[in-house]
Image (cartoon, rainbow, N blue to C red):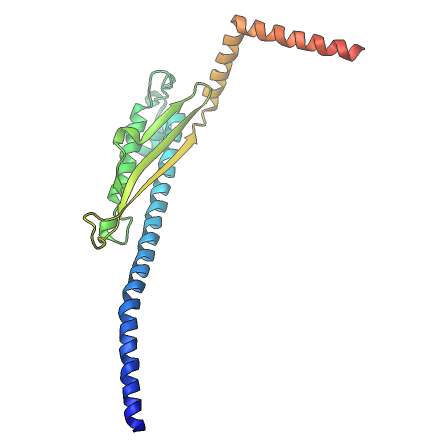
Length: 220
C-alpha cells in the first residue's frame, strides 16, 4: 500500500513540474532574448555615437585648416604653390564640400560596417544626406555639428503584430571650430563696428553718467 502511494506521489510531482516548466521556460526565454536585444541596441548606439563624434571632430578640423584635408587625401604636405588656404571660406560658403564629405563618411561608417550581432538589427539611417553635417557660423565663433536619426528593428515579431518593434534613436555631436585667427578678425570687426557707429558713443555716455552718479555718492 505504501509503495503504491509513493508511485502516485512521484507521478503527481512529475506532472506538476512539467506544468511549471511549460509556464516558466517561455517567460524566461522572452526575458533573456529581450535582454540580449537591448544590450545589442545599446551596443549599436554606442558605435553610432562614436562615428558621429569622430566625424564632427574631423569636420571641425577641416573647417579650421583646409590643408588638413589635402594632407589626408594625398598623404603628404603640399608645396607652397599648391596650398589652398581659402581665406574667405567663411563668407562665401566654402564649407559645402566639407559638409558633403563628412556626410558621405558618416553614411559609409554606419551602413558599411557591421554594428550588430543580428543581421536584422542593422541601424536604418533616416536622416537625409544634406542634413547630416552642418557648419554653423555664429559670426563671432563657429561650430561643426553632425546629427543622425536611425531606427533599430526587433529581429522577430511578437504575436499579433504585423510589423516588428522599432527603436527610434538620434545621435548628435557639435564641436567648436578652433580657428584663432578668424576669431580675432571677427572680434576686431565687431569692435570696429561699435566704434564707428553711434551705438558705441551712446554706451559710453551711459557709462559716463553711471560713473558720475556713483562718484557723487562717494564724495559725500
